[in-house]
Length: 234
Image 1 (cartoon, rainbow, N blue to C red):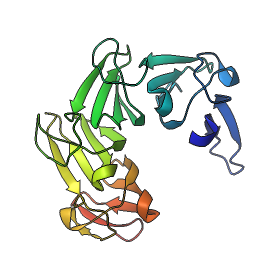
Image 2 (image 1 turned 60 degrees about the vertical axis):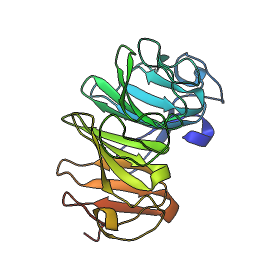
Image 3 (image 1 turned 180 degrees about the horizontal axis):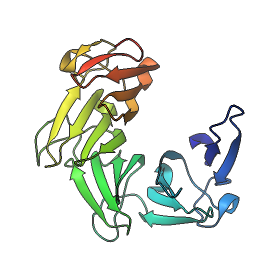
Image 4 (image 1 turned 120 degrees about the horizontal axis):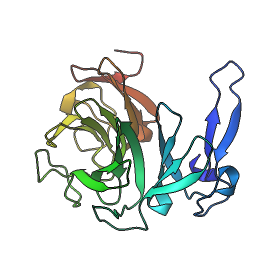
């Protein structure tokens, strides 16, 4: 709950009860439950045990909420860029858990990062320079936000500033799945389709990518063959 600086939980039953899991007022405090503080949490990832990992965007950190609601900082000490045992982030906006690794859309650093559950950071793709390049070591993003990791690891990226959906392969090379680099709302295959500032995405077991196409106020669907359409059309 970005604007309220809270992480909240909603039950899956018909009553859909909502409660605060952790957080209170804007700030940075590692304590339990509502004694903890976040600053603009943008995305979460949950493991099978119920541990929640948070992209705490304005605090430039990856935070962790244990099952007993105790909040701790997993990685990050303030805005900047650094890999290694004491990594730095700049407004991380997306987070996805795959096995024992977290993938993070490090928005202002124009990179997709990887964080181990011990808090060690590395760069999965991106040079730090804003741009729209596919390929390996010279691939570029522009304000990457949402990420979704699947086995491989393969990481799908909502490349917001490039108005595109990108994919990072297991060898860390980057390709454009869909989008032209220019804001638009066209359906179609691959680079014939267009988005407007996509912020979030998710991938299902069949390989369909669901995209929160923020600027177009739509949920879009990218099929495994690369066809883009409004969700429910394909």
